[in-house]
Image (cartoon, rainbow, N blue to C red; front, side):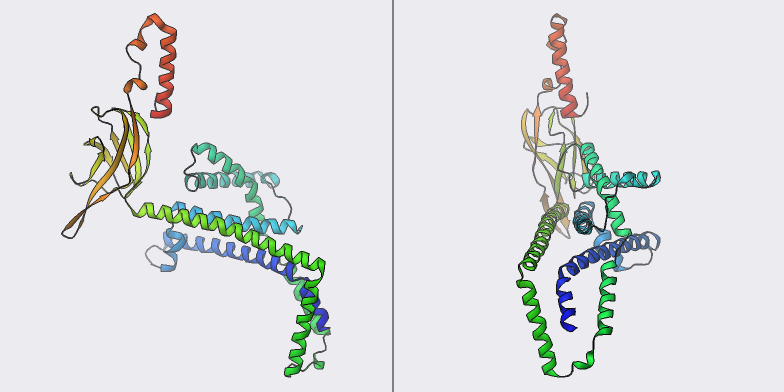
Length: 373
């Protein structure tokens, strides 16, 4: 009877690993949701009472960091959903399967996730609303499955295994085996090892085992690779935030007299004439807005056309020592004003149709590059 139970255990080893993985993914996500809920409630409602466990890690993540970890969590839950569907224990779930209220909630949640990831993880890709629309459609397809997976845990395998082991245990005559005797224990261990080797050595079991190992290696490698990329991106973003960094300049193609918006990290608040906005054509004296993350200024009329490098210099006082902190350098392409605006010749009526076409082209250029018509 003991050998029979050992064979049953060997045959269900792969199934046990898969079910255990699905259960651990479900347990981790439920625990994380409970932690986040409790942490944010504690931070907002009981903000007077400090609790370090709720004031570190996830709660204090920047949006980009939080988005990176959400990608990893979604990969884990999607792999668990796939395994459950592959075992025919979960059907296809659609947004429209439930009530209208549930469909509206799914669509709103998908839009929120799509907009969040479009503004954090996929910030490098242009066209915000196209990114948001595509990500919304993607999340609308996977959210119903994720919700069903988290709200309807299945412990059928563990219950059945427990019942089988109980029945086998009650039928087992343990009086025949002396478990306090070293020889009996060695005999039992040897029998288990021999049966395990025989079971694995069978061709069909070997193929199943290899497929299972390959599957786990591929899933683990894929998730590990994604995690490594996201971790590297997270460290890159953290380095940007910890230094004086210019992240974005809009527009990058401009002309004299046009406003420029610059965003980044650690610009500080301008203190007299010690904080400077410098270009290779000289200092920009007039800055309309200067705060820790944004700068607004106008290209001086005396600047020349051509590529222009621009950076920020801040004077940092550390006790009695002053040191100059310099940001990264970004490039502007300054064009002639007549590249965007009509000249006197373009307004002459003698070549009306040709001049009208030129004015339309320049208006399109202003709309695309300068952001106004």
